[in-house]
Amino acid sequence: MKVLIIGSGGREHCLAWKLASASNVSKIYAIPGNPGIAKIGQCINIGISGSDFKSISDFVFEENIDFTIVGPEAPLVDGIVDFFQSKGQKIFGPDKSAARLEGSKVFTKELCVKYGIPTAGSIKFNRNDYSEAVSYIKNLNDGDFPVVIKVDGLAAGKGVIIPQTKESALDEITNCFINNTFGSAADSLIIEEFIEGFEVSLLNLCDGRNIVPMALAQDYKKIFDGDRGKNTGGMGSYSPVPFVDEKLFNKMLSEIIYPSYEAIIKEGINYRGVLYGGIIVSKGQPYLLEYNCRFGDPETQAILPNLNSDLLDLMLRCSDGKLGSSKCSWRNTKCVCVVLASQGYPETSSKNDLIEGLDCPGDAETEKGGNSAIVFHAGTISRNSKIYTNGGRVLGVVASAESFKQARKVVYEAISNIRFEGMQFRRDIAKRVEEEIS
Ligand code: GLY
Image (tube, rainbow, N blue to C red):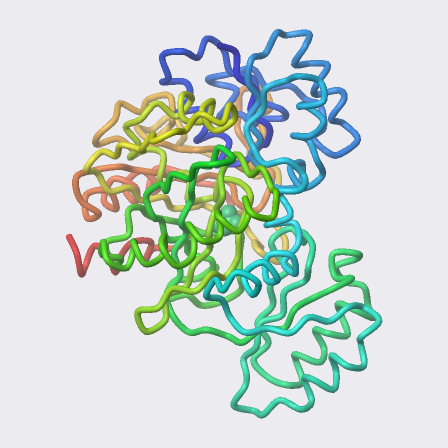
């Protein structure tokens, strides 16, 4: 079977790597892909935005590609699945209506309220409610801060803001509604209470009727050790999450994931693909923070190396509505992913810095399973057989081992061989798990 992966990040490299081991995959293509994916598949340099769906679909016809997998959220929210389905082409991911779960924070919040899904209390404002939003913030007490402001639409991972004070909350509202910082993504926004707790990512495979949970992962969003500094797209991850016992996991499923999926079906939405729940646990109670309509990045890089099941088979079943009573089977291994970011990230990112040391045990090509690290490419570019930085999150170094302690050891040893100007990474990914669990 010929498979096309849409996207260019570490998540897409990891998907390609996992699918390359599936017995039924004869060739992997990626649009646009990255130099890591290029080692296992053919990367095609055409765009992936709304207006390019026809070119992608034409390419799929020309190359007789059997199955297309969409990595990032933007093409899903823009309707790539609807476009492919209208051409009779098989694709993995939710259609435009279903992708509203990520594409509209207001839509998801209203669904949660309607169906009693535990989530933070919130209030919605439209752009022409600017003065009401200002009055609402002004009337809050100092003890009500921080609050969480979420712009309704997609905002490249920057649309969730947590102002600590009344003044900064007022500034943020002005940025959204008056200064137009987020464009039309902030035509509406919600202001919600801040819930203190620990966050987990719960990804689920869906076929329109059935939903199958995957192993939990935890993502590190802050740039610096100790969860300090600015928010990023994710500086590392690990899976599974031993702090969540079976009882709490079942509570997440029975109070959030399953009732949400029933609600989605009741609303007439045919959700196929991955439904990714961002969940916070506070005093033993899980609350839904957000839904995403795709695999998480970098959670995927920590989840898939532990997966025993045939990923292609599961994805095809999602797309065909045939998950039935399928389950994911997991190795008894622990996986850690550490992201190497470029200088200036997350505010800016430097490009064209030479990356050295990728031929150490740790390049994905030399991965032998068990005790070697895998390097997933993200913001990289290849020129004259050399690899350079080309974005904020550059590489994800991953190891799966019998303990978190061993996985961390392998990952950080591999990182010690990799160099580029201004390279930054966190040294505490899965450290607490190693100390408390291993
Ligand atoms: N790791 C966060 C995300 O994928 O949205």
